[in-house]
Image (cartoon, rainbow, N blue to C red; front, side, top):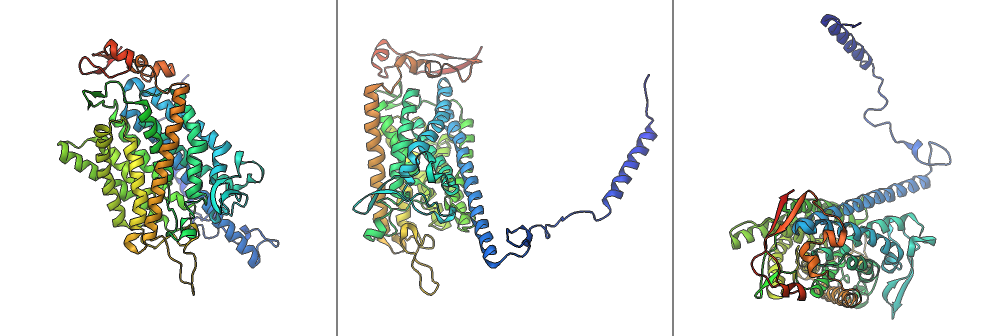
Length: 540
């Protein structure tokens, strides 16, 4: 039996439903559509509900401010964490298809290893003697610093986030700083890609997360000796690095340089002393990764205020945006002029170079100067890639050394030159004095009247390179002697996905190679080629 509804009955039913809905909507039954009645004195905890005292109002206002800072800091940390996806896409896109699973896996693994290492030891070494972080409610447990003659060397509190470090302010600081550490740990994977053992990156990540990064981080951000150059020696505000051009990027880039130098170039990279291009397999993937990194940088730099109530966030965000944009633009135009084509890979590295360079000075400079810093970075990264590739013959598959080490140092220098004194009063305990309500002096560079700040920044740059490269070189050299950090020539020729990971990134495709290495190349690991190597993806 079937039931048919006539067309007229259906129309009448719809009209009736519409009338009913209209009748229900006409009365003003809404609760509080404008929000004017939502949030009142009744929402403030008080001994007598609805009539809070002045002290209770002040307490509620303080909690609201710190709560806003917590939310902003954690949200910024989540944005920085998402940068891991950007790094994975950039590095994988710039390398070959036969190593895609290996490169992606490294970028995931370094976060897992880094988080554990920083939780166990790194955070305590870096921030154990920091003292109060007013924006996060004080963090009172972090007050134990190893010193020598009054100069801070290492933190001694907060390991495993245990004991009285079980504190909401400490936990908020840990999450934000942990994702910064993860950026530093990720950088060497790009410089060492396509010929490094997965196990070497695992051990190297523990080393960076537990020792290399936090020790230098303590010296700059944890109240250590570089931060004290201003208070103790009168050198400006001491070493100033707002969001990590030096602490994060230069240290990670220096570790990548040490690893790439010990590994040596990829097979086939140099023939008769001249570098041969080894194109990445997926430029669109790398471009997408660059856009994700750009997005995440709005957590990286503005988030470093650790305060949703610090209105300087607007300046930091715009400076970050403009330096990244101008860096990519100048890199594109310069490459277009020199080579006749706007190389998309160099455009990506120009964007990242501008973002790295503005990371240290982003809070201390004005908009035009931010554009200048980005423009210099865009040209500098092109020159640097050529210098490492052609002059020093150090093989860096993704340009990580040029982007992060070189432009990280440029960012530190830019603070010493261009900081305009409008922000940073009290930074590292300097310039906080005021008289009759007039704010103290902010961070000021050479061109605005303080040569001492430039001296502090030059010391910061020298120490960042010496520590980052020197300690990493020793570590990777020792590790190479113990386990060997480079894969066999056969594994490198085949691609690292199967030999190292046991899984192909693209199992539906077969990678074939038109040219092979000579017997001498396989036995010695030298790039002796019979003719130019080709890599072709052929569908099964």
